[in-house]
Length: 117
Image (cartoon, rainbow, N blue to C red; front, side):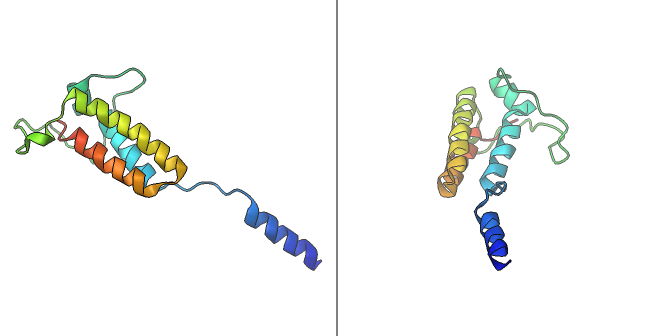
């Protein structure tokens, strides 16, 4: 009887468990929604395979009309495209389990996006 209990415990310990969402995966989802927002579409246009996200309960109700005070924060279509590429790279890093690289890539992607309208 003890052998069966030990065998069962060993089988449970070695069985694959469902993967939990990482903090990086949550960041990726947030930035993907931001890149599919009305502000990003205004800057870069709606890309094939993407849908416009609307109605976020935490979203801003209206776009700011004044330009950002930091010129590096001005969004352009090229910067949004580069951010999309970085998101793909961050997803790969997250799937490999490289949290540090994923977080660094996400920080770079956020900087590329800048201040969307």
